[in-house]
Length: 548
Image (cartoon, rainbow, N blue to C red; front, top):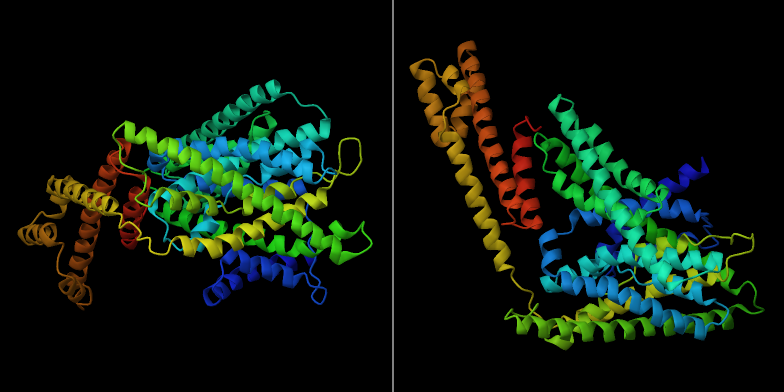
């Protein structure tokens, strides 16, 4: 029962922290970390023991799956150069540079372990920076940070696992690691795409046979990231990349027909899941802080001098991470800008280059993935001895997360002062054009003759009412008057007209949806426009009581 009480308390705190963050001008992750630390205070004394493997398996697959699902694929492709340079190049640059610095500053940390720590400090958290910036970042910069966070979650954690394997086994070969990295990465992507496609085929087969209960399909979606992760790991591939690939593939398969109710339920469930899991991760960080501090200073005679030195180590490592990120961002930003100018393309953003570089540098906030990764460090080596400096690694990672959040809270508003966020005029025009195209498709569908309409319009009165419905779908007041008429004949007529109206509306809505899918398949609209309009169409269909 104690475990059940603890889970309920943590979930309640996640909800309360969201309300508190609306009152206190602090980012939600900082509020949640502080709430966890307060809960772990000796007076309250809540203690949560974490199993590293369970922590990694429970939190990472659904979060990475959701990131892959929601990432706008068209923007990801358009900004692929900038994103890949940050998500892959910067990760390797950080692992080498920060890894050697950590080993030089703290010789008690072996070099492979230092590389592992640098790798787990590489992934960034776009959710945290979005909460801090409050949608005031220029859209291209925000898309770059989102794409980087999606891709470097995978590249950083895969590199982290290789460095951990080298630390455990004591063997490392750059050639073997490079080949294995490619095989593991490609294998993980293939497993995720294949499994997601198979689940999509299964769902389509179920829908064709009338097995379209939304709860059943949503459960399949909840299990998919865990299944992709486990299957890839069993095959020796990257479970992390498998979860990301499954999410990206699922964003295409989410357009299955007769799935209106499932999509609506799915969005609500995944929004709740993301909110709860992100909140739980930061709460658990706060809960672990007292134990982490005690473990770091447990071998020393005095607490405060040791803690001070360790905090200075964290500040130094964070400063090196910022410097490395700024050097890489500035170099690649100028290089990509030069290439775009040579090709005759406009700049990525209207914000001046130096300010853009600092926004991307400070926007590299560490968060949930870094914490989940470092918590997965094994307690013991293969020979049975303690993993070297595990408590110190967790302390440094926790400190870097806190410092990156605090630095972003201070620096981002200053850097964004005077920057006018783009009005997204192109997106607004794209939405308007999409609505126009889908409306034309609905009109064409209503103009076509439907055998069911002919049967419903056998006599002149019914034909007149049907024509009126097609022209204006009947006045709402006339409909209500007919519904509440006491005569059985009027009620029967109203019921018949109600069914006819629903059928016409459904035909129009489904024609709009097919046109929307066609525009997406031909890459004339982006994922964000697709989600916005598809959500409104699904709500309209659900309001008719016939959402399938």
